[in-house]
Amino acid sequence: MRWTKSAMLTVIGGCLMFGTSAYAGTSYEPVSVKAKVETEAVSHGDDAADDPAIWLHPTDPEDSKIIATNKAGGLLVYDLEGRQNYAYALGRMNNVDVRYDFKLGDAKIDIAGATNRTTNSIDLFRISSKGELTGINGKPIVSSMSEVYGFSLYHSLRSGKFYALVLGKNGEFEQYELYDNGNGKIDGKLVRSFTLGSQSEGLVVDDEYGRMYIAEEDVGVWAFDAEPGGGSQGTLIAAVDNKRLTADVEGLTMYYGKDGDGYLIVSSQGSNRYAVYDREDDNEYLGSFTIADGRDIDGTTETDGIDVLNYDLGDAFEEGLFVAQDDQNVEKGEVVNQNFKLVAWEDIADAFEEAGADIESLDPVNPRELKKRNP
Image 1 (tube, rainbow, N blue to C red):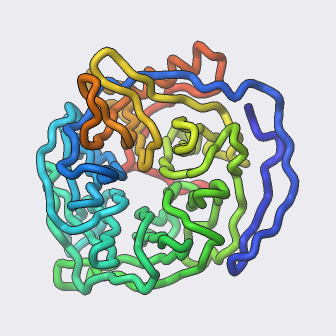
Image 2: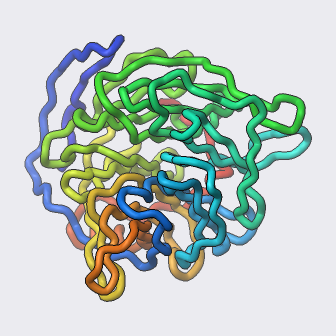
């Protein structure tokens, strides 16, 4: 199913204005894949695991890591075999993201950022060559919103600046410019804010096109200009219609292909599916997939956070990696603490190819080598 005309809907000051949309008439049935690896379960029960971010190792892709949130206890770092390498008890960490080559003093460093609901702050970390995290905040970046929630980093390829983007439980949005404070730490200053109509969490930025996507849970996915002067007006590019997307709309992630190609992937929590949209133009809907039970690893349900990386990470993930939080983790027939499932992108691409969908493995892209593109 593809959008033949994008649904246009704008928000200004929390007010919604509707336009029209039309759809082509093909099947909404998802394809099915299985996870190749699962992480060790988080240490807390109930709803604890939430959001993953894939960090690409600068010299050894097979040594890349998954940095993930335990919103009952902190940040976790896993290797690509699912083993927990590090755990950091930092508070109720909700969403996490990574970026590369932030200039701090005379060095360029990889950074992670996350929303900390315990302190209502944005916490920033330096990522070592082993995937270890070291706090790098200067002055604490404490939000004035009711409760920090969704999160993304943004590296503007127009200006070279880095930003932390944050969503609140009540639909608040804030954008902070991150900068070297001269003392080996990173400070942030508020440069934009507005409010959506209702609760929103999923947030991702396409650094090459300078587009920001926000998932308003009961409404759908909005596209905004990611620059601080981008204003508060967005376009609803994917509505909750109980076909493509079923509320809650949760995690968002960007699959980068060469020359501006690629996909926006959305967690349709209410239908246990992942909807795939074209990254270019009007973000046409291309198809959906599920992660089903395998012989040794169960599938996923009601997924919160997701991430994807289109890069060769070794034998297990030669054509890239997709990671999804699993709400109900089952081992040997018993429900245990939540975890994250790792799926080889080639398995997703093969399933879509068999179904005749226009989704495939694209030429790999190193996230350290993104290029500015015109929207």
